[in-house]
Image 1 (cartoon, rainbow, N blue to C red):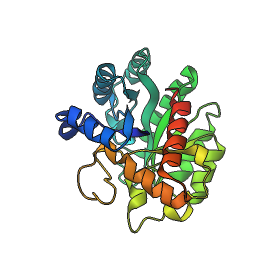
Image 2 (spheres, rainbow, N blue to C red):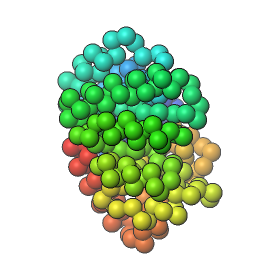
Image 3 (tube, rainbow, N blue to C red):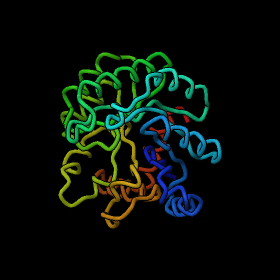
Length: 251
């Protein structure tokens, strides 16, 4: 069975049909989910879902796009969330220099603050990185005791290996199935015990559903692509990535 390590189940099109969405996921062999927050309002919804469904876990964090809107008391509020056993990670945090919805300065400030929380609580982090390899690596190196996952990895092999050297996992999403993706060219050279799978739903629906709203069950298509890349059975990929998720998030 597979674990979708990064999904946004609080979006209306998913939340309003969640029982059916989860049933379709089960039919595809996906039976555990980490509902990842992008701000503190989303975090409340993630937590509520994780309390309702025993196979849904939650994270709490502030996405780089949302950094400029972080409330003054965000650090205290994140700490308060962490009192819940259903919370398994801090995030989604990180840097996004592709869209720069928040200024790089505030993105880095909010990123570092959340890394400090993870360091203090010995929690893994889920981080977003788009066109910000150098600065993300620099900040991660400031917190050598923290581990976590580079979610929806889209950078180059050299960056993946640097993240792995720092103790992080690499998570692949539907973009690894895209015809023009560069990811299959090196993914098979990464250590399998450092790889996770995800959907990032409702975004990045994999082939053969590209362009349509994504669902967590489609983690299976990411795993199938990895089985092709690694020349291993789907079962072997499922067992490895599920074991990795269990280890990282202490599930």
